Amino acid sequence: MSTSKKDKDLVWHPFTHLRSENENICIDRAEGSYYYDEKGTRYIDAISSWWVNLHGHSHPYINSKVAEQLGKFEHTMFSGFTHKPAVDLAERLLKHLPKNQSKIFYSDNGSTAVEVALKMALQYWDNKGESKPLFIAFENAYHGDTFGGMSVGERNVFNNAFEQLLFDVVHVPLPNADNISEIEKQLQDLFKNHSVAGFIFEPLVQGAAGMVMYEAQYLDRLISICNKHKVITIADEVMTGFGRTGKFFASDYLQNKPDIICLSKGLTGGYLPLGVTGCAQFIYDAFVSDDKKKTFFHGHSYTGNPISCTAALASMDLMEEKRTWIGIDRIIKKHELFLSKNASHKAIKSIRQTGTILAIELKTDEHTHYLNNASEKITEHFLKHGILIRPLGNVFYVLPPYCINFGDLDFIYTRIEELLNSK
Image 1 (cartoon, rainbow, N blue to C red):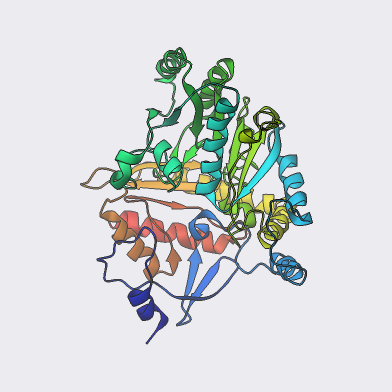
Image 2 (cartoon, helix red, strand yellow):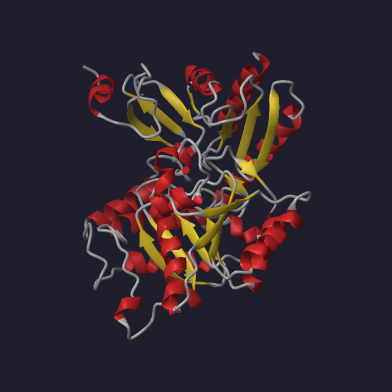
């Protein structure tokens, strides 16, 4: 029996319709921008393996650094102990994060990085003797699958079953030229009763919502209002970090910097789970006290894992090389050309781009939604041509590793045009 058939019998996969008859593709090996299944079929990884892979699969430099660390030790508890990879990574990250960031807290993934941020914000106020239970987030937000992350996310198919258990959050529209003044007034009104702990947002791009994009200038205005009212701002950069938007972090486009920043996905170059929650000094200072009850009682068994930190350090080495940014710029320019060529195509409802992220929203008889039936047809079309693309309903996107070559990008664009012309 093949691995794929055994998988069907034994394994429960994420975000997977269990009545589907399809078997999962069993990957046997990967290199650069390519996956190879157990039959030897090659697939171009056009979405960086769910947005995590930056430099290509099985990268020899990251492999060597991880192997070197494995020869030293694999893990240590992170309470009462520390190690060089975790300290070095914190130092490296803080060099690239906004200057107001001063401390790094480690966890396991994007959802936990967000959970830590929410708990930091709530306990910050509690440690100061103030009760501020309310958060503000954007409509259609997605911030992970833990209960805090689900609470600040949009109430939708992802979390309907748990809605009665989620805490109250005010969701406001994404800002644009037409509604920014109205949203500013809404925030001003919310801040009057002094109950708002924080404002959380995905800067510039809402990934799971369908790669919905908006302009930094309007987010800047909302952060400015939060700063004036001392409301903590949290940037969820789990997807947008490490060059995806064309800068090291999406927050680099902002004049007003967030107080807390959440990182994961590309953090280790796509190698190992690791989450980071960075914070400004004033957040940390609220937990420094002779009163032990003001301790931040949060941790994970694998917090600050040295192998994960080593992979992240190796990825940071590559991110700081000129050739990586040449690759990023090349992808951006290729996306721009494709967008300008196909912007008015009759099959497209919307085509949009931020940095290395190109998203296409197809016209369908259904409304735009994660469960739109176009998803299966899109997936089938690209897999038939050896391209891994995972649609968000009738929205699909190209978000490749930075090492992808011109020929593979052109091949992907040609297959997209074939799909569009078949509509």
